[in-house]
Length: 148
Image: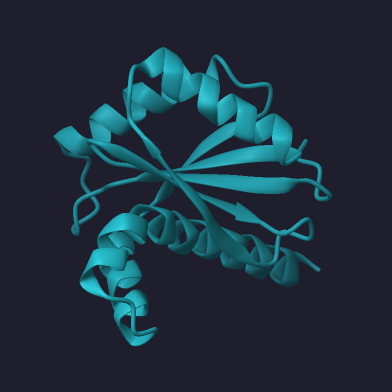
């Protein structure tokens, strides 16, 4: 059972970087947290586990990069394998969440906010993670409202 008084951490897994976002304690709002440079799985998993402990996280959401038509391609399978291995090292549940168009949406939001191309490159992964997380939080809130 998921505790609702803990934060949710979201990950946007890229080839070289991992974007990280976190929710507020009420699981209403997402914000970008940081970008981790990918190293080894062991180092990545240790850094993610440290963030889980440090921020009182109760759930980790990993962006699942399905194709636009919803199919699971090679990149989505890589993310599934990584997430399966990561889940075995974390003290909290991990779920995959559809992330179609999250990086595009993040880029658009950053352009609208007037971020330079240089700043966008540095933060795009973390902002994409926040887009994924906000989508997850909104869906959970809609589910709660519909069942209440």
